[in-house]
Image (cartoon, rainbow, N blue to C red):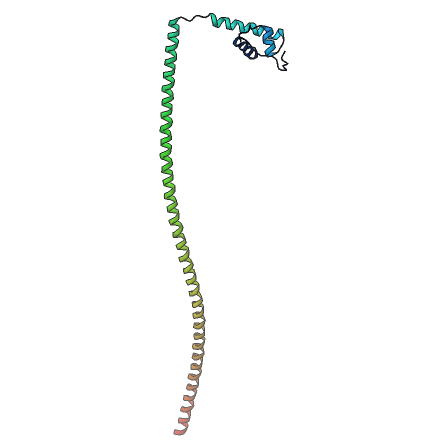
Length: 189
């Protein structure tokens, strides 16, 4: 007897019965218990159910007209299913082609944008270089301007100094001219 821990199921009984039938042995409750295990009270009703199903299958005679109708219905179902499957395959193929075209378009757009980006990056780099050059030139001009401002201030200071000297000389000249006039007046008297 087989030692089994799980309860015997209808499927276990069916498999055991089929094996017994295949081996040419009689399908009995004891023979099934030897293969599948279980108890007489559990296996007995399951074996009886299997035997009833077997008897029903072997005694059913299907008329030729019904068989032809079933074959025709099966052929129609197969034809419809094949047609639907083919339509589905065609639809999927079209969608795949459409997606492939869209992917190519997107890839071309990406390439175009990458090229444009490279051009913009180059222009940006060129502009940065020009800006750096302009900044350097502006710095040089500010330094030069500061030096020129300093020179201008020096020149203004010199001019003011010379103007002050000229004013003093003119004042001295005016005093000397007055003295000379006074001397000339004294001498003419």
